[in-house]
Length: 132
Image (cartoon, rainbow, N blue to C red):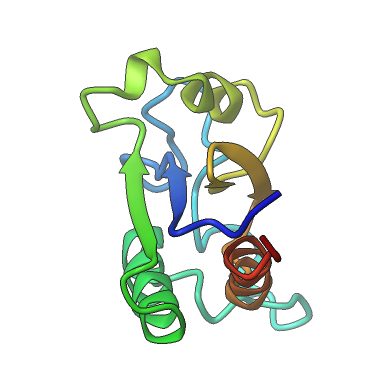
């Protein structure tokens, strides 16, 4: 296998339209930042209040800095994007099979439920640096 000239990272998200209610009809499993946040005994993710769209933008900047001009990053809100109804990722998210977001690298599902920047960067590096 030879080194790739560029890599595509797509983040599929289905953020809730209103707190506790998901627009995809799933009953609210996508609600970010809700739940036991009021209970100090539970861990609270500091990124929970930052939209996945903004987290994806930060990922894009990080990958561009590491691999200039070699990584395309796209954020897709499957509930608002015109392609949403026909995407298999929409069905996966609404079926509760995987938590939001879904991260695909070069068309392959790689991560679900978080945006692990360091691990994504490692996978992109591996794809771009494979010997020819």
